[in-house]
Length: 110
Image (cartoon, rainbow, N blue to C red; front, side, top):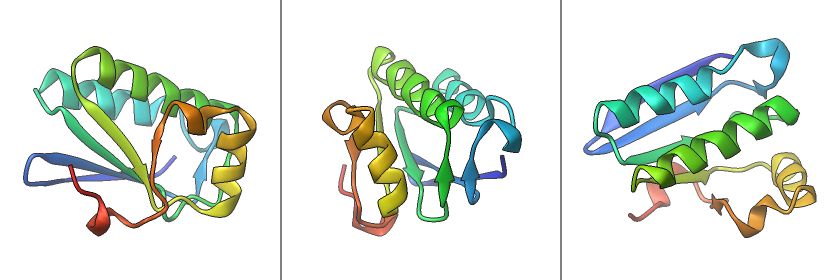
């Protein structure tokens, strides 16, 4: 999976590519989140505006990243979600647990 990242003040912004799947990489998202948490970053924004497809590994990485962040006292927000990705997360009832925003990263207030 192609994953870019940058800091915006005290927020780590992670931007996956078009696919969040097993075939696009292994644990890249989880690794980036763990590295950020180890460095003391507690605000993580996952900008999914480019993600067109997500599979079970992608969902698993999001859940693992969310749990790790919460366990460390941080916050992970998903934003820019496309309808297809929202549908997959809703089918797994994750919309009840995850902090999901359809708005883009510029509209997220901490």
